[in-house]
Length: 332
Image 1 (tube, rainbow, N blue to C red):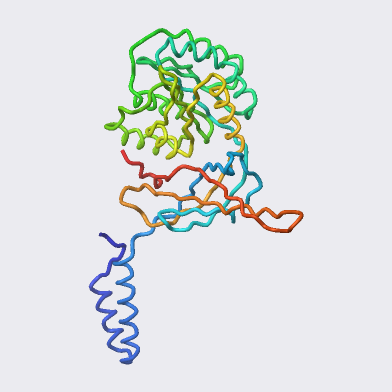
Image 2: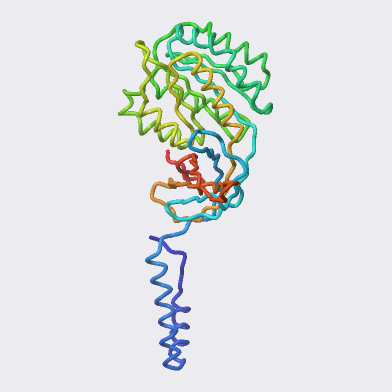
């Protein structure tokens, strides 16, 4: 461990003369203070320089309804178990960079995109007009629009092109998500979202799950994972999808009908428009991996009944990304 202290022999000699020429009690007190200083430096960890951390926060009640009008004193942020002072907390519908990523065989993808196109276009037309979008499909090789766009007509054309994209081989889920994360880096907006639609359950990801989680952690992207039903019509939860979406502050969906899939796109669009922006300045101790684990909580709403005056606490649920990397220390 290195410390930012340097003493020359001349300075040490001068310090010794200074100590010897003082009164005994004063000398003892000075030595005690020097010992306290040395012990403090040695025993306590180095504190990281203050870093502004921005979070996208979703708050709902138990029915899933989005809650507005909350204040920053109702929210608690723990950075490595250390409470943080929230600098700003506001509900704001900021522009979003959105990538729709379809990971499935081309024939299945063509059927899906044709059926879901009205819901996808509704997603876009009802969202922030400053949002930008990219359409991409993967099933071995990739098809992707060349650039992000805000033009609804162009986006509709890209959905048609995606449905016509040729059949290729099957890629892995790692390839698909890595492709999407790489693509979204070129977006213009700070808030970035991947809507990932796949018929892969992720069960074969045991060896690559750590790599996938690391990729999502580094990207600072919000992942909404949509798992399609299997051949027999069931749609069980995917552990991989749950972990990947949760660490990013997103959510996983498991529709079994076309109507439920359309509702999924509507719910994601609604959520993006009702999220809070939270900023705090972290001065928590550095960690060995430079990854800071975050825990957020929100106080219950206090609802007063008009007739009796009784106050009933209503629990709320908060969701955001699970951590962040220190500036300049992203793990390679």
